[in-house]
Image (cartoon, rainbow, N blue to C red; front, side):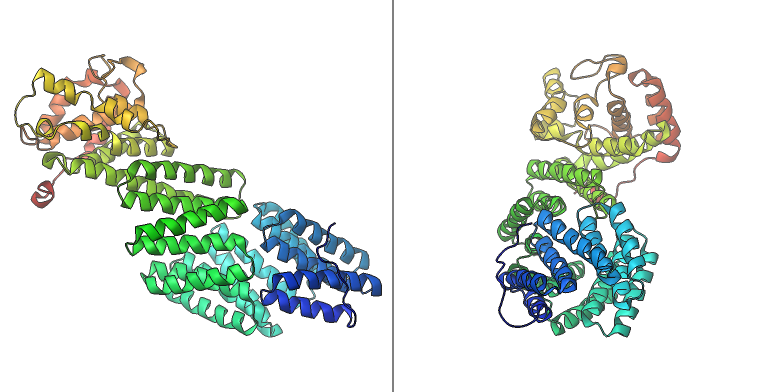
Length: 538
């Protein structure tokens, strides 16, 4: 094991040196803290103060873990555990196990973390302060897994134990995590109170890293409440603290928060600069979660600037990153974050579809209705959630190629000429060309290209027939026709329900029999759209 700057300091016991090193650590004097812990190890080994050496190994391991040096951190923590076991000191064994569990937790091995926490609780049951820390860590595990009731119980037990022990630093940690729990439950006032209490206690104990975490997570609450100046102040102060204690993993999240704040207050240039800084830091430190979240926020920024292709590219990257986290069962609420990402995908595609329709008075809201109808048909057909999501997203973009169709053809009040129809018939091809460089987590491109193909081979653009047409395209196709019939067009008024169903029945050869039957089943609840005059004139 390589120790940095191992220079024993003359005078003072190893225990005295440990107190000084811990003070430097809390105050963010990282270089001095590392040298101090190394001095403790050297002095303790020479004076046979091996319990103090075990403590120094543990504190040094946590410091290196914060600096994103996982291999060295694990090695030092294992050294602490081994020495404590040799000494037969159950308290030190429990403390080392607790630290190892925390590292396993942050590295994504939640099962290993839970086992280590249980072992630590058994070894350290006689020490109320340690029990408080372990209760708190178990609360974090429950919180991430969405078991908020159990998490709250663990946190409250932890806070009570810290209060009994008079441990202000522990109380600060407990209040911080209660703030996180209440923020997850959108109980903003309670979260605000806990973060303020935690920050005050962290200041009292001069714990700079915890102060930074309080400010950063409090900024999330300020953002949810629209208090943008408070977001800026908190995130900037947190960034300075993280820089001082060399907490590179946390700096990326502080930059992301600043980027979101600038985006939401209409300063896109600053927003992009801060989000790019977050991405650069996340990649440099190897934090997949931070990179995924910063990428998602960059996508939202691109979408707000109508940079739709860039937005979709960024969303695809973010989706891949969250998939990597899910594969590792990382110590985050991956499912919740993926649902949030997919909601962003939906919003980007919905907004893009609406922007396409805005040039055509008669088709405003068309993509939204087709998405709704198609999803109902997919459910009636028994398709799973992934297939339903694919169909909904494909429906939002099925007409994207119409941006290349001349306005006068889209809005022509009479019959299209043969030449004009040939132009209209190119929109599925143009849509695919526009999205050629974009990848999606869902297979939506076949919907865009083939939603006008017909089961009997009379459709366009490729004259596909039968089962050569993907079922997703067939479903969007039948929903597209239903909306066309039941909505007003430049060349005719909307048809009533019975008339539209009659035309669909005469044309049922255009769709797979099971798709048509699913449409008829869904049609009982679909109804016909009622579009307010104000919306139709938008």
